[in-house]
Length: 348
Image 1 (cartoon, one colour):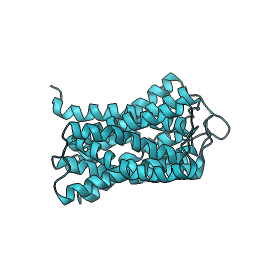
Image 2 (image 1 turned 180 degrees about the vertical axis):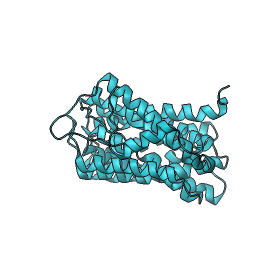
Image 3 (image 1 turned 60 degrees about the vertical axis):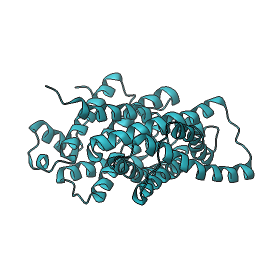
Image 4 (image 1 turned 180 degrees about the horizontal axis):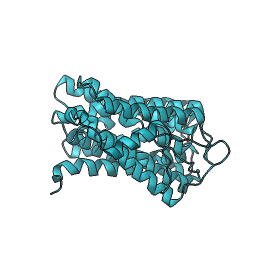
């Protein structure tokens, strides 16, 4: 007998959101091709607000009634719909879509850490080990900045993307904790976007008054509309719901799957090369003398490895009893190989 549907629904929903969000680096790269990053960061929120406000009013979604709830809404909105879009747009202009997507794979680490701090809960030792390995991969990715056939990754671009991830994770936790009080994820997203859009609209007016309305091709404008409607509205509604219903620490690890769709789309739409990957679970390591195109078999192996990493972290993320059990031998072997740097994403 399988797990109940109520426990599977948040996982399935979060998985679908990862597919949507996996396209965010690609959409942002397409948007900043013709538009200044400040325009992309501001207008995606302004356009999203034009959609969110009438929907919130039509569906009679209430604002939080207590001060704590309203504060969580403000934190969620400001970090997710003002700070993140601006920082990420500037960072994505100066790095490749693949780098942007892989750096965002550290989000479950930041989200889980903030959740533990907010809940005054000490993460298990195994969860900490997994996070250290993943962060080491992030550092390697930024330090080596392997070329990708598209935009040349820069240290500044990678660091801005990393900073945006650090800050947006605060909003994830704030929105999820608001949802845990009984406030709906739909209202959290719609009012968070609407309130943030007011601030972004004021800044946009100042920018436009100084430099004029931006001119761009249909591809860039389509990308902005995707970021506004699909990434922002649909993505956040589903994500906050999944975090609130499935548990922050448990659901956050599903974000390790986000780079998979991003890598594929970056290769198909932007012509960026997939280099050989040593995933722990987010590191890119490239041989200085050789580069590889990732074949279908290698991509399948990458997906299988990410499943193992997700299961490993999920088992110990928020369960003190599980943290005391020994890992199965195959997982211990995988972890040892990770530490020793021997895992290769290749079909066996």
